[in-house]
Amino acid sequence: MSQKIAITGMGIISSIGNNVGENLSSLKNGKHGISDIELFETRHAGNIKTGEIKLSNEELAQKLQLDEGNNATRTSLLGMIAAKEAVESADISNINEYKTGLISSTSVGGMDITEKYFYSYEDFPEKQKYIDSHDAGNSSLLIADYLGLKGLVSTISTACSSAANAIMMGAKLIKNGILDRVIVGGTDSLSKFTLNGFNTLMILTDSYNTPFDNNRKGLNLGEAAAFIVLESDEVVKKENKKVLGYLSGYGNANDAHHQTASSENGQGAYLAMEKALKISGLKKENIDYINVHGTATPNNDLSEGIAMIRIFGENHVPEFSSTKAFTGHTLAAAAGIEAVFSILAMQNNMIFPNLNFKTKMEEFDLVPVTTLTEKEINHVLSNSFGFGGNCSTLIFSKS
Image (cartoon, rainbow, N blue to C red; front, side, top):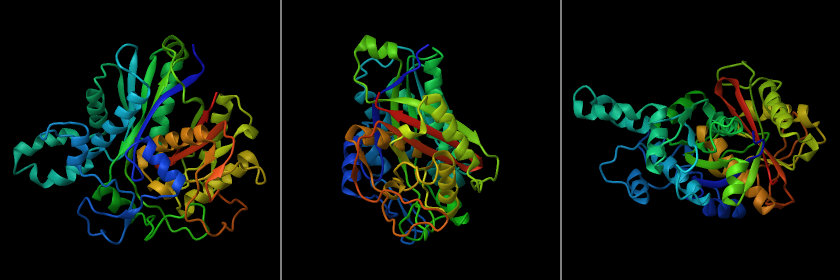
């Protein structure tokens, strides 16, 4: 069994760019994508800012060259764009040449279509065809169909750690010889249901999110999709593939503390990081950069900071930043886009800034990186924590 999981391709669409190159340019230039809502009707438009992708569903479908009559949800369309770029980036011409799978993740699923037609289902039976698009697995099947993939397809929905768990599952499938390569990541679109839900939880900010700032008020929701291609050593060697990096470690844990809050001592985050380090075989001193979950909510940033101190020691926490100030919190897609950002950090030897930070948190002496910083980066630890206490950590390495 191969123990090294190579990353050979990646694709992304977010509020700061429609592909990998555009996202990198925005990260380098400090250009965030948080703005007023324009593309769906909500009473919160003009009051709540989000990381909205400024392309309509029709424009997304045109980019994909889909027929006008397609029934794809926005979540599916975003996923198709990112997955297509990932496959092309990996230079895969025959997607079914090897045992290939797709592990996708989503929280929102087809909610945008459900919201549009929910009250029409009883009076207009012809609209009932859209009911099937609601469930999470529908987007995965549509992405696989668009790619022409005939292998294993699965869907993970563990809230905001979903894409990390999809990546982890893909790695295990390769390590156990079930697949030779797998496209892994996540996709989520904005919807009224999500916006209203998070607003009810009172964890949305009325301005721009400020991760790890003492005066943080809450998060900005975002929408995005991102996928990476994982391949076994055997395929990489046989095809002489270019490798972008390696998935060297991963860990998942659940602190079983609260439906929507992290534990005060960061137990779930601590256990996830501890497991990921153990699997990677790396020492904690080897981590050059942490892409923190960093939602800018009072609870998350405090809990995650405590967990990092427990792992590394207060005076030895590696340089860290949250990229959610660029994109907003993209829910199930978050770990996917931050996997891409982690790989870009290694490729370019730079730490992307934690935007909007002003005041250090009073509970501990941790300060994120606030300017674009050049540094030799060989190992990146990326955190993603979901509702229900589902905490996941990934470690990406150059070699």
